[in-house]
Image 1 (cartoon, rainbow, N blue to C red):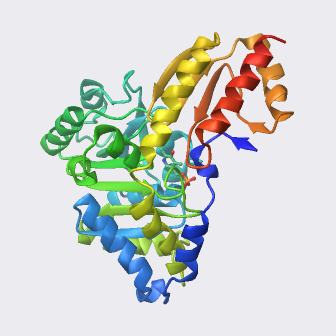
Image 2 (image 1 turned 180 degrees about the horizontal axis):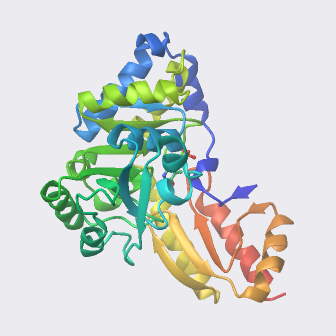
Length: 333
Ligand SMILES: *Cc1c(COP(=O)(O)O)cnc(C)c1O
């Protein structure tokens, strides 16, 4: 089976499972799971923030991040296609009474600061209070430029907004830009990180920020049902991933670039390729046929007019060669 739907499909390796089995555990709600504490300390160190908090999912981490920044009747400015606007079931509005103000991202995945400025509401009883700017890095594979982040951060200070980065795939940006996590995270107040995508753990996300913020988040996490007990088993996978699975993300990026070239040579139109994501155009009349062609050949791919192909640590170059061969055979059928 070749699964290119997402990098969430990665499974724990034998070595990661070993680390999980060997994990020392305690009760993390009592704060005495040493492995969770070690993972949170490591995330804080890497991001240059004072503290971090472990979550079962990125969606819960993003929700708690919003709840810890905004009160009922507050507003956050966010991308129209951002995960924490579009793909989290409206959680901020439903569970937090927080109003999203979505705006269109630019071609490069940034939120243009003039559009952000225009969306900020004046202090007037007619309006929700604009409190937070939320960016996503990487955004559909696109790495936000550091000079943009620096400008966005300075802007947020000027306008008295907090700045959150949904960094579900932030380590893809770290590897693509060849910088430390801290070099990116210095331009935000808070940051979420997914361990269960390209980093390859079965479960887990982190929220990083200052101590007082993370203490608030700890209460919201308990309320959201995210206070886990012997979570050290899961945190051990996270520690393993941070140690062993970050630098290798470059292989995923190289594989996505290679696959893009191969498909282009085969006559497939490449729309975009950055980091571990490749987007190709599939003519409308081919969509269904291609979907079943792959299904019959043990390839899992969500085929659409623009098809997203995601590389990860469970697909190697050989698997991608097979994919190219299947695609060529389809076009020559
Ligand atoms: C995957 C993802 C999340 C969190 O997803 P979960 O499946 O809940 O862990 C958040 N933001 C972005 C940009 C994502 O890609």
